[in-house]
Amino acid sequence: MRRSLLPVLLLGVSLAAPWAHAATPPQQPEQGPGGRDYKSTEVVKRAIGTASAGTFVFHGADTPSKPRPVVVFLHSWGAVNPGLYGGWIDHLARKGLLVLFPRFQDVNRSRPADASNLAEDLIQSALAALADDLNAKPDMERVAFVGHSAGVPIALNLAAGVSSGKVPVPKLIFGLMPGGIASNEKERGILLRDLSAVDPATLIIAMSGDRDYLPSDRASRLLLQQARAVPSTRKLFMRAASDDHGFPALTATLASPGSPKADYDASAIKLPPDPPRDPKQRNTWRWSADMALSGPQTILTQQLGNNGTDTLDFLAFWKTFDIASEAAFAGKDATALLRDPKFVDMSTWSDGWPVKRLSAQMPKGEGPESKEERGPRRRLNMAPPETRQGLSDFLTNSRS
Image (cartoon, rainbow, N blue to C red; front, side, top):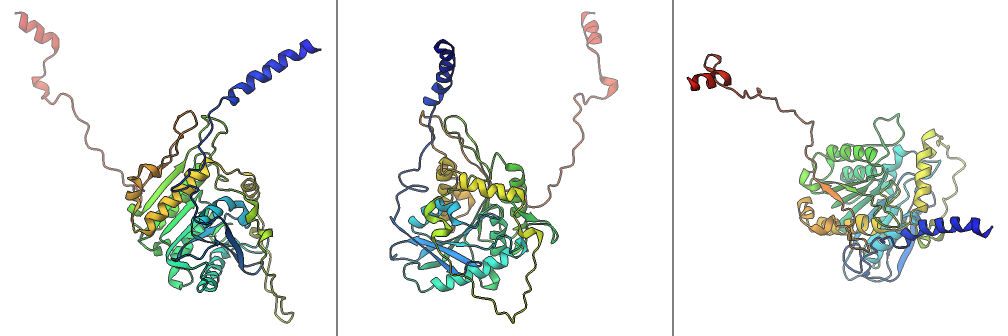
């Protein structure tokens, strides 16, 4: 019996040995963009609004000397729990920013078509409540929108509707894995507003992951194209790459922006209950199929909760946003980002091998590409036919 087990044990050891010596991915930088040189050790977590329409608020547990830049974090459809993005929210809040997480969706009770309007109202109410708060201290001149999946078209819709006065003008829109866009009112998804109203000074970045890039790429290009008032020098199309050089491998999927952290779970941040409905008031609410999560939306939400925080979070998402927001708040455009080699760098594996870098490019054309007319094919022998001489005739004449 022991002899029969020996080959199995040897096989197991031989398979495990390569992983024991595999290179490990880079960890969070000590300092700088994406780094853990935090201004605050503790984060204030609170909520404004009610259970069905509320905004979670996060900022450092200190009294800042200057107003805090504002980050509006717009979740994917179904990911209404800030704990699913807790690692990133913690990073932003401890870096000194004020993070608003509007819960613009009441699962099974609200429609995607109403999400943009609800998000506007929630942001307006939250900023009004925080206007005189010395600890929150929002800086309305330094505002950035972060969106994931369906949160990206909502971010563009909010930017296109700033003329209503409900939300401030964002300096940066940072969208990850855009999706959930409806092409007409009958489709399930976010219906786009007139994105040509987006402020021309806005810096827009759309990033996809290489494992699920086709739908995200199409959505990214659509959003960048429709925000036609924004020049191409203020737009970037980016992609995060998977890398299996070492262990654990880095996989850039739709759920990669998820960074679950229990401290930021909605159950630990109580929202006030909704006020009782007046029985005399007529109930106009009607259920529709698009209020429920689709199969892919349910799977994505589950994957966000199981996604570990790794190098893609530290260097592809957190670091990229930190660099981009600093540039946007300073009035710089995309060309300044492309000149910075750190912007797309992903550091190295433990054996010194470089992690696959991010790709970043400005849109090549905003309208339909026009094909150049092909000119006439070049003739290799331009001499008239009567003057052409074959090789054999030339050799014959030269010998005579």
